[in-house]
Image (cartoon, rainbow, N blue to C red):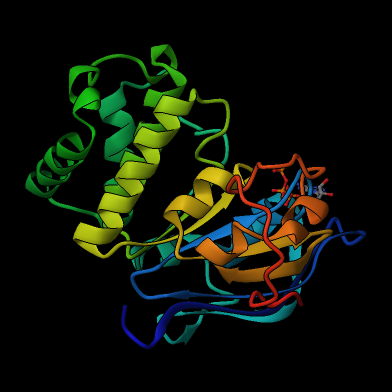
Amino acid sequence: MSEAPILQVDGIAVTYSQIIAAVHDVSLTVPAGGIVALLGGNGAGKTTSLKAISSLVRAERGELTAGRVVYRGADVTQAQPWTLVERGLVQVLEGRRCFAHLSVEDNLRIGSFARRPARADIRVGLERVYGIFPRLKDRRKTLAGYTSGGEQQMVAIGRALMARPSLVLLDEPSMGLAPQIVEEIFEIVAALNRDEGVSFLLAEQNATVALRYAHYGYVLEGGRVAAQGPANELAERDVLQEAYLGGAPGRYAGRRVQDERVAVV
Ligand code: ATP
């Protein structure tokens, strides 16, 4: 990993419809070439934080009322979402959001449009995605609405990859998927990170799996960062069980260790 972070978020606050304060003071860093997990239970502010970074929060009457977002050294707090996609910052939305009435391949093609590519570039991009997700090649003519949840998640990630991203904001990739498919998706995230240097900021309720693949993690609670630390250390924290998801014992790594090396902020 290089020194300069690919993403720096400083003290952001987000309000919806001018009254609902969803995120209060979130700061985080994604090192270039890193996988960073954003953890927390329902309503903790994970999705809102991702959408604040990608500027998509405005589409939901959300407003960034404080803080700033720096991507590759440039202040992008007020950037339009499509300019961020052009610059390689791409979000995969929660719930996959495929175009159900379009084929798998047409869904993928849409991902390349921000780059205004030549036809040959689209073909190269598709072959790259099919190399990563061979299953999508078999299903390329199928309407996305008729594919499984796992395949739709692959389409959503594949569509993001068509934009040739440097940083992917991945929202709840495990949602509603069988454990085996979740592992498959996370293995691909790890391979993209390792082999192609793609950085990831991934929001997950499933801390167990996220912390196994991430390098570093932040735990959000009530729109604030409640804890943070290297993934292997964070996975061992009792504080996670208290702060998050009602604290099922053994949920995080099977070990219950009092470990004060992790900063609780
Ligand atoms: P989940 O995993 O359940 O999606 P989350 O950690 O991603 O949770 P957010 O979706 O960011 O949390 O929600 C944070 C808070 O903001 C919640 O109280 C939620 O009800 C509120 N909120 C989210 N989206 C909107 C919206 N479009 N309009 C108004 N309030 C919203």
